[in-house]
Image 1 (cartoon, rainbow, N blue to C red):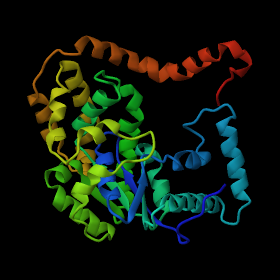
Image 2: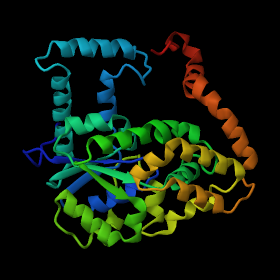
Image 3: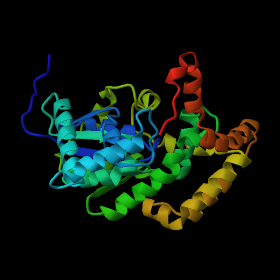
Image 4: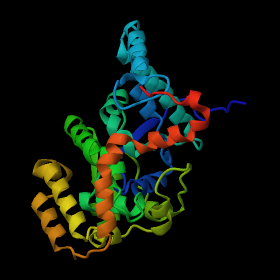
Length: 332
């Protein structure tokens, strides 16, 4: 039986953009403690919808490239073309956000890490939505990725899209929509959370709520995705994670990888994020050096191009379907 809406007027969406492991779940929980803000762990709803107009980045059984051609052909029959299509998608998603505000909240916060891939399309589809951009020291992001997704192993190849394409798109979003972007630096937030949260609420047009820094501890995000470890480990905002990267990026291979990555980003991109290239390189050089994980890191780094070229996840699925050979098809 369909559920009934608690509100009749649409809510205002807010979007939180960042790389994975940037502290977005912490910021999401703080904002979700405000009585006017609803959220869910990671909705992901806009990614497949917006990729219906992208001819690259998806391989499927149904033939994604042909699907994109079909959708574009359909859009050509609409009075406003693709703009009408995007507007209809926005209306549908806004209806879902409104249904998710079950206690009458006025705002819905969508925090989905890979939204960086479609960030400019989202900004265009929801012109009234505040765009929060959360930055964190890239060295800390890399270390947290290795510790969480890789469980201590150097498996950053599974997050290549985030570290390269994702970061470029976030900077592009910030440059194009500078007047709408509300930038937050993780380090500044955890060093003075009260001032940081007060400033953020003011920019969002939300009334002050002094209890947020205590109330966020009780925020339980619905859904299977999100940072479960961080939610359990940190019941208060602390500076501890700021320097934790030094104990992770500590062998010569990891340091060399990070030096190449920082130089690839360049001083300009890092400055746009609020960081200094020379200072980051100096901090990396000053971090203690050990040979822990050296051998496994060497193997993981050698495997990275194999992962990129051979797509072992797709190969694994094809092997799983071997008993049903008719189901093994080429993805296009």
